[in-house]
Structure formats: C-alpha cells, structure tokens
Length: 444
Image: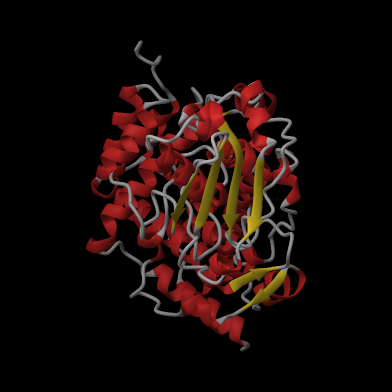
C-alpha cells in the first residue's frame, strides 16, 4: 500500500466513525448558517434564476436554497454549489488555500434532504466534508495558474456523502479516493476574466462527490491512492502526510474565515485598510491622487482595471479598493460602471511586497498608502482580513447582521435557527426543504 492509499484508508476509518465534538459544534453551526445565507443570496441573482429555469430540473426532495422550489438531489447540489460561490461571500480557509465548505456542503445538504437523515448524522457529514476537504487543501500545492475550485475539495464532498450513507471504513476510503480522481483543472484567469465556468466548478464538486459515494456504495470504487496521480502529478504536488496530520485533534473548521466583502479574499485586507482610513480626519475621497496597495504574492496578480462583469470585478483589487474608498462598502449591489470608481481604479497600483509574502500562510497581509492632492498621505497595514479566525473573528450576530443587509429577516432567522438546531433534529428533510423559500424583503 502506497502512502496515499494508507492515508486515505486512515481518513476513511476516521470519517466512518466521526461524531461532532462539543468544542466544534458551535463553529460548525456558524459555518452552516453562513453557507445557507450566502447560497440564498446567490440564488436571488437574475442569472442564477435563469440558470435554474434553464436546468429544468424535475421536482424532488432537495431544496434550491432561496430558489423557491425543491428538485432532484443532483440538481440541487449542482445549482446550490454555483449559487454559493457566485458572489464571493462564501467561507474560506487560508491554510487549505480555498473553500472547504463550498466544496462539500451543497452535496451533503442535498443528500441529507433526500435521505431524511438524522440531525446528528447530517452534522457529522458536514464536519467530515469540511475536514477532509481542508486536509486535501493543505496537502495539495497546485501548479501556478491553477484555481482551487473543483480540485482538492472534491474528496471532502465524497467523505460527507459517504458518512451520510453509512458506508464502512473501506468503502468510505474508496469514495474519497474516487473523488480525488474526479477533479477539475481550472485556470485562475477564468475568474479574473469573468467567466462563470469558475462558479460551475463548485457545482461539479458537489455532483462528483455524490457520484463517488454512490460508486463506493455499489461496491465499484477502489482506494488506489489516485490523488497522487491527479492532484500530485497532473495538477501539482501532494504531501500525503498532511492528510492525516493531527487527525482528530486539530479541527480545521475552527480556523477558517468569513467574508464581509463580495470579492476575492485576496482583496479583503486592502479593502479593510481603506475602510479604516476612511474614518481618518485627513481622508477625502475626492482628493485622492493615487492608492498604492502592497500585497503578498498570492494577491499581487489581481490588478486588472478592465472588469466586464461582477465576477471579473470581484477579482480586481483596483475595483474593490476604489469602491471601498468611494462608497464604504463592497457588496452584491455595488455598481460596476460608476465613473468615479473607474477613474479612481485607474490610479490604484498593486505590487507584491516581499516582506508580506514571507508572512504567508499565517497572515494574508496588505499595506495601503493613499496619497492626496494636498501632498498628504495615509498608510494602514492589516495582517488578515476582518472575519479571519485569527483576526477579528465574526460571531453569529455579526453573520446575521451581514446577511440581514441583503436577505429578508425571516429567512435569516430561519437559517440561523436551523444551523443551531440541526444536530438535535430527529430528521432533517422537512427543515431543509423549508430553506427553498424566502419572503419579500421588509421595507427599510
């Protein structure tokens, strides 16, 4: 048995017996709350509504969260996965270098609704999906230019689905290994160019996770250590030791980040710095001559000033910084064609600062210098974005406050209650299906 096989076998045994520890339950609940709310927000976008209509999915047991109806399991998993990431508000993890929850939660929630699983099993499956995805994210170093969506996280989706199906250790390991052979090779430039195929990679992760678990349930999946070939040879390199390091003692779900800006996480520290500077007495939005943004190597490439849609804008540091400076918020409704934003964005310079790169991965820092037409300047450096578990972590009221700006309060309250109560529910199907509907937003 090779190292990858052995590590995957250990993961399979761990997942098959996994229950949610008391010290992790609150964080799992908060991540679930965020996932449900952000998915519903994505479902409200006109393009997501059009996609759901074009899909023509038959009625079924699984909710399109915030989408108004219930459809077949696979359709719900795919469409919810796309909606979850469409506004760049989904929870993430700096050590995994991506988004573990987004890779696995849509598949687990759809399958749990189909199976009418117990709350305890559903919670354990969600935790398994997150932890396995995060471990594959830690273990994988993708080639330069590769986007993490749809690659290392697919085994997490399979692990969660296998846990829901009650598969034994060997079959669970086979599901995880099979999922590692169903990964996508997506290029990061698809995101910066505004191609929504980047969102589809998360839908593919959900349905591939379901497929891998079903193959294992049918007895036709094997654990051959295929991650060493797909993730470790074709797409990058794989450190098998990271798959099981501190297994059962380190809980990666407690170390993630929540997002308060509708933009790529690499832009958040710069946005936070600008928002802090807005409160300085010397700040004048109309008097800005230049903005210098110093970032780490991972964020230094998001320099385009030629965004063409919301996706490409969310991956443009000049757009994000200019929007923050002029309006004080980067949200789902931030205008894309504001002349003032475009003019200021053209005066934003983004560079890599080697001293910030050396602080990765523990810090994703940014340093922002704003120069004004009177010759003065303001400087602010932040070590991590607001919302990072290591730097201004968000609480349930914080997440509720963010979601409440964009979603009807009754839906936000229902999502929060479901997340808090999930593990204690005898069955989850009905409660999950209630997430399909949202009420009209109350007038301000």
